[in-house]
Image (cartoon, rainbow, N blue to C red; front, side, top):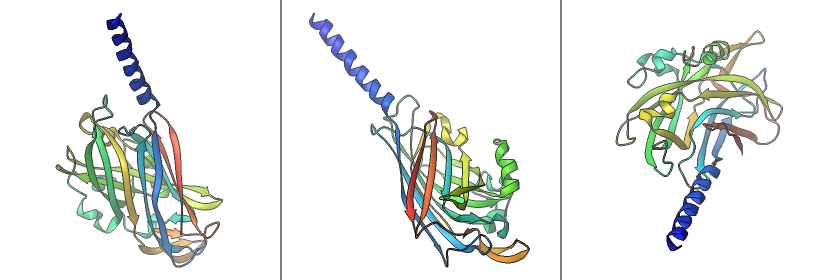
Length: 269
């Protein structure tokens, strides 16, 4: 009887542990959000702007978060004008060692990503993997994701270049992903939304699960000239074209590998 009770207790502990893992879900918070422009701007007279944002990802059971496969990032009333700045090709941005020199003038920002890597069957394993971000204005997309090819040709986009080596990460990673812009309305205001999917080579480098836990990034106030309704206008790569109130909403949508979709928002000046 005692052995039977001990076996039952052990089975119960395992069942509770498995249930905890099954119920564990990602948590998200936008912890950094801000933009600067000389005025609110309008769609006919955009005001060049900079943008800073960051977010944190956690887990309700303090495990390594689920791998995120899709992102959508938008700042209310900020539009993008990729044609106002130099570009380079996707292949150049995705060069094996950093980015090609041809992309130097196309860099629009940068940042960092902190990740936790581990074996797919053990989410308690947390190996730090910290990477450097370089954001590059590109003129074509990633053939692995056909939608990026047509959308970047139509609306523009950026390469999110990721670079790291040991000891900052268990394995070296030097790769970019293509992120096209889409025109949306946020709080009823014209807005550019950045959308991208994470390829397997970045989601599962070297067979590990790579879970994002914190991102900080910024896009500089870089200017150029484009035609708007037949008139030459000085614009920024990002430009303010208005906002609904005294602040603007920064919205980040996440879709993890299990298909769960969640959105985090923050107000910014």
